[in-house]
Structures are given as C-alpha cells and as structure tokens.
Amino acid sequence: MEVTQKMFFYYDFKKVMLFKNTVTSAQKKNAI
Image (cartoon, rainbow, N blue to C red; front, side, top):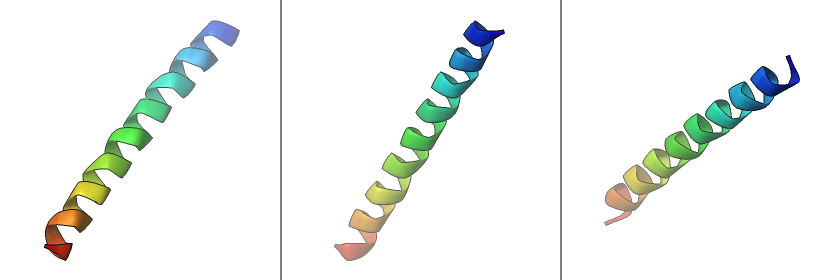
C-alpha cells in the first residue's frame, strides 16, 4: 500500500510539474 501511494504521488508530482512548465511557457509567449 505504501508503494502505491508513493507511485501515485510521483505521477501526480510529474503531472503538476508538466502543467507548471506548460503554464510558464505560455506566459513567456504572451510576454513576447
């Protein structure tokens, strides 16, 4: 159970980072 929680957290973290990168890149495009 602990392992699945870690895996879920890891994937969730990756999704959040990807989302943040997409948002920041979009903001940079808008700034230019």
